[in-house]
Length: 482
Image 1 (cartoon, one colour):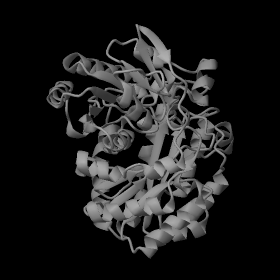
Image 2 (tube, rainbow, N blue to C red):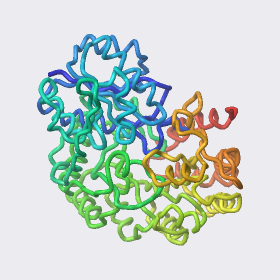
Image 3 (tube, rainbow, N blue to C red):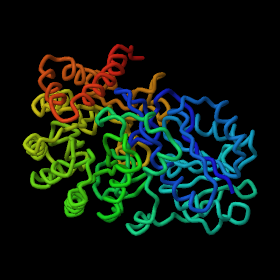
């Protein structure tokens, strides 16, 4: 059995495996095909597998068709996202036509639109939600009977069959999976990937899956990984850190991609203890939450942590309540002070256009950003993702301009707004996003912040990353809205 896993071609630097609808990063960043890589590791235990990342290698559809024909796979797995769904289905169909292999589509849209996806003759199977173990079972029986494989939809005599949902993985399952960093080493070129918030080159890993928090706009917990929180053991996580330092010595930073690595503070402290005891010398960063305490931050810093990404979302407590964030602006202020006190960097994520947004609340957010002075800032357009409470709210109230998320990005892959409120329009949302970014990054007041980023350990690498991001950001700023 030969299996070809593909992050399909689309727009340049298109990030298909992000938490949003799929878009090009305004910083020029490109994520690893993370979930495909984990599936590759699971499948490699029993099958001959090839992982291809077309956006990273700048491959077109004809390129991947030629590559797949040489490999001669029995099964082709194609990743997808909402804003690239038609493209991804078409690529899979072309591959099926030229190889006669069975095709499986994976990714967030599969849990929401399995029937729509299977209307295409080019798709044979849809693996819904978390899919690595489901793929392994499909590969084991695909020439026989798929009835026993949970979590999939498929066609049988031209009729669509939906098998029962699959139980999400357990912590024990995650501990047994191969390190994703090994998959990167063996299948990909780590120098193809860049995160604006991380030292280059970097790797992205998961220490856990699922998020128990109820943020109404967040996609992965309802479209891919679920809310059930499961996590690898501290020893297993530390083992991967050690593996990376030995087998990928050129890596400057590990980014922990968990929705919130700091959910289990004891686990965080145990990982930090393991790093120190083994004297692992590696820089790392993670996603955090505004309720993280200073003492844990200090332990993280002592164990090599460099930066925390925090979802601030808004400068209005009313908005935070509307989206069920579970934190407030006072907590965020304390978090920001503690981050600086612990000598860490803060990457602040904000969103304009969430439920209840007005010009007044948007102004509060822009003011709050300037007060917090994050080392790195991201302001996103609120994108209602199918499956989320935010999407349902927009649709029920008539605020959704289109149900086709392929219209949520422009010709360059940058976010476009697809919601509009009576008192706060699509144009208002886009203008406040652009204004917030320009007023922060293009203001003389950002110079001291930028200098503080550079005048620290790894300052030269910090500077190189800032320059690379700035070039793409200026292209974004200079584009014309349509």
